[in-house]
View 1: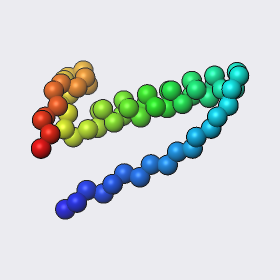
View 2 (view 1 turned 90 degrees about the vertical axis):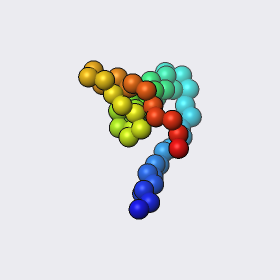
View 3 (view 1 turned 90 degrees about the horizontal axis):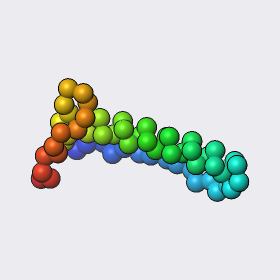
Length: 60
């Protein structure tokens, strides 16, 4: 059975000054959260007892 593809939507905003710095920090935190979630939920990674990834299986 084929896996369902994940659909992602995003918006790109360009701002500068203090508002741009706040937006960049918010986006960085959001990206970090997504990457952490993804690394914890990848089926091809094994995790140790502390939740850290061990070794990925070789690609098939």
